[in-house]
Image (tube, rainbow, N blue to C red; front, side, top):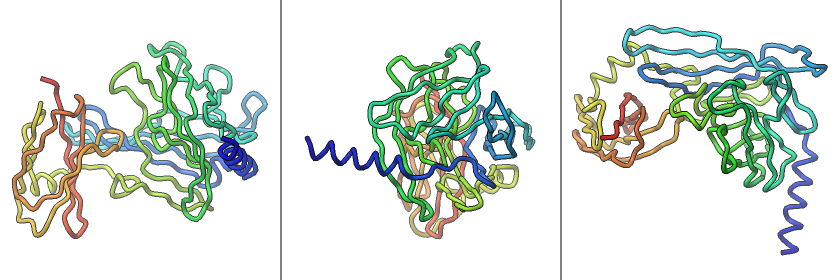
Length: 304
């Protein structure tokens, strides 16, 4: 017991002495996004500095880039600005006329902090509590970075869409807490990429490029390569290749947050896939051939 205590004490001392960085020059995040018949991504980037309530804040611009699968239209719009700052290893953000903690890298296991939602009139309420489960160090792009794993407390109505939060990058889900009392209502999905001028590019591999959107040309190419039916489906889907495939193919199903739900390797030209265990909602089926070429289609799971 004493040895464990000393280990965590030393780890906390190391974490506390490292200099924190938040939204430096060039800082840009890309996140997955999809809703109904729209797909695309959310881009958040550092655009400048300002003073809010006496604090020198980093201005983060949030934009959504989408493709409408029904009308075949690309669009983008600014969905808001966030005012954030770093102080004593804590990242703060501005909601409801005051600052809340976004990420607290001083936290140790079982600590908690209050996060704020979108607005005080939201059906999920205005605040919630997140609890720290573990702390540690990781290395990305040759940088040693602190990380936390967190979870919502028992009665929380807001939560981070990933349990992992990393120094400099933030949550591996969306940057800000999302509502969990309403199904399929969210501002952004899983992190695709992070970049800043000194850190360089960090990609998670969930999309062919940070700013990738499946559009008209991609859509027709993918439809000509394989078919998936029925859409929507309740318990099984059939995937059938319309062109000859050489070697084995990896088939993966992802949810709208970028979490991989199924993975199958096959050399068949027609395959029946059981999706009965998936929750109702929108998913993407990805097919990757043996030379690494990848294609995606959207599927919809309905509960019978």
